[in-house]
Image (cartoon, rainbow, N blue to C red; front, top):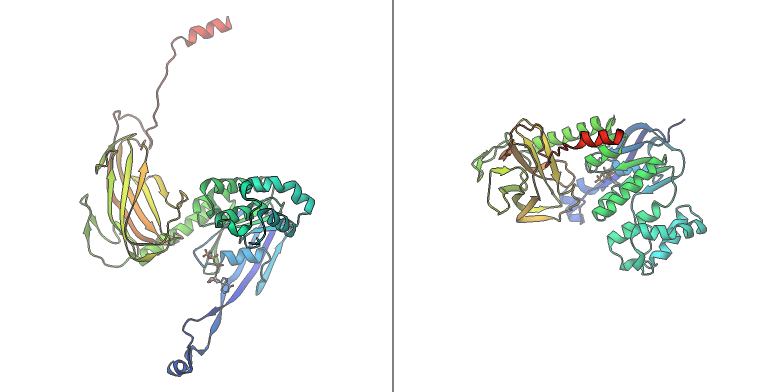
Length: 425
Ligand SMILES: Nc1ncnc2c1ncn2[C@@H]1O[C@H](COP(=O)(O)OP(=O)(O)OP(=O)(O)O)[C@@H](O)[C@H]1O
C-alpha cells in the first residue's frame, strides 16, 4: 500500500446516557420502570472508508456532532474502531487537545522538556529546539513561571509550539486554529503549510470552509457519522454549504408577521427572510461617514452597516455575516465576524453590532447589503435578510467595467521614446 492513511469500513459506537433516568424508586414506579434503562449504544461513525495519499492535505467537514473529532482520534490511535480498520504509515502527531498533557504545577520550561520527550524527541533534541519553541509560543518572559499562571491562550500556544517542533509524517489538526489571536492563527497556518511543503500528510478539521478550500487537496464530508462525500474541495464544500442552506430553509417558520424595514421593504419569510428566528435582526442601517442613514454612496467613500438584534433567550456564540451582492447576483464581498477572528460570547436581549468599511471601492451600480446571524457552527441562520437593503453606488465616470472601482491614475510619459532612442544610439 502506498497510501499514508487507509480508513476501511470504520464504525465506532458510543454509549449515550439518558437524562430522564428516575432519581428515586417512587419516580421509577411512576415512570413504569421505562427510564430504568440508563443508556443505549449508538454509532458515532458508520462504514467510513477513504484513503489519503502521502503528502496530501485532507479537510474533514460536517456539522456539530457529525463524528469529525471521533474519526481524527481513531486515526491518531486514540481509541479503537468497533468495526473496520485504520492503517497509518509513519510517525503521527496529533494536535487535538492542545495543552491537555501540560502540567499546571511545572513551569513552561519544564513542560517543554517533558512533552518534547513524550512526543518522541530526545532530551538533546528538545534542548536544540528549546529557543525556537519559546519564540514560536511568544512566551519568553513567562517561561519560568508555573503553567497555572498562564491564560488558556498561552497554554494553547505552548502546546502548539511543542507539537510543531517534532517531525511527523502524519499531522492531525482539530480546530486548533480557532485559538489565539489572528496573528498567532496565521503563524500556525504558515507552519502547517510548511509541514505540507515538506511532504507531511495532514488531516485537518475546521468549521471554516474558506480555509478548508484554500488549504486542502481533498475534503471528506461527514453527516451523522456517515460519509456523504469525499473529493475535490470546491465540490464537496459546495455540497456541504448547500445542505446548510437547506437546513436554514427547513427551520424557517412557515408563517411569520410581515415587517416593514426603515427603508420601506417588506420582510417576508421564505421570500427575502430566512432562519429559525430564535434571534432576530430588528433593524439595519447603512450609514455614511457622518453617521447619516443612506441608500446611495459615492464609490470610495466609507460605509458603516449597523445591525440591531434581539435574542429573547441566550444564544451561544452566534456569528454575524454581511455580503455585498450586485443586482445581478454576483457576490462582491462576503465576510463574517468569525472570518475576522471575532468569537462573540453568548448573546441575550437587545444589542447592536456595526461593520465599518473604511472605503468601498465598488463600481457604479445597484447593490444589496445582505445581513445574517448564524448558529455558532454555521449550521443554519437564525435570521438572514436577502436583498432587503439596497445601496446605489455612484461614480463620476460611467465607462469603467467590472465589480471594483480601483483607485488609479494613468501616467503618460511623452519623453519616453526620445530617451530610449538616445540609450540605443
Ligand atoms: N467519548 C464519548 N462518549 C460518548 N459519546 C461521544 C464520545 N465522544 C463523542 N461522542 C458523541 O459522538 C458523536 C460525534 O462526536 P464528535 O465529537 O466526533 O463530532 P464532531 O463532528 O467532532 O463535532 P464538533 O464539530 O462539535 O466537534 C456526538 O454525538 C458526540 O456526542
